[in-house]
Image (tube, rainbow, N blue to C red; front, side):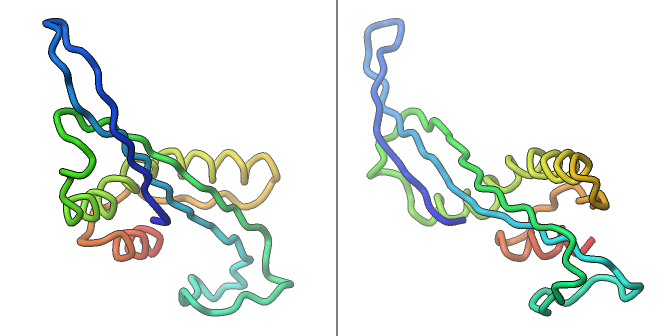
Length: 134
């Protein structure tokens, strides 16, 4: 997760009452590196990939926007926002990331990686590591 932007909005309900809400936009970057396997299986996460084995790289930034009604931005619990970002945001963009990877790699005739369904863990880093490792 690289950031969250929040702003307060107000609307009027059918009875003329004011509804306070917050619009929250979370930004997240993600990246996929495709390398030839050479029969060695998955590489350790931080292992350098030799340039002659690098086939392609795909990066994307996702912006997920949510409307939180009935509360002003300064009343939002910061720990709750952090927990929401770590568990829900990636869960919501994951199907789009999977589709983007599959369609882009197919278009440029690279091996099409299969990303598994998203699995929620205690935090985003554990989730992404576990999901990619499957």
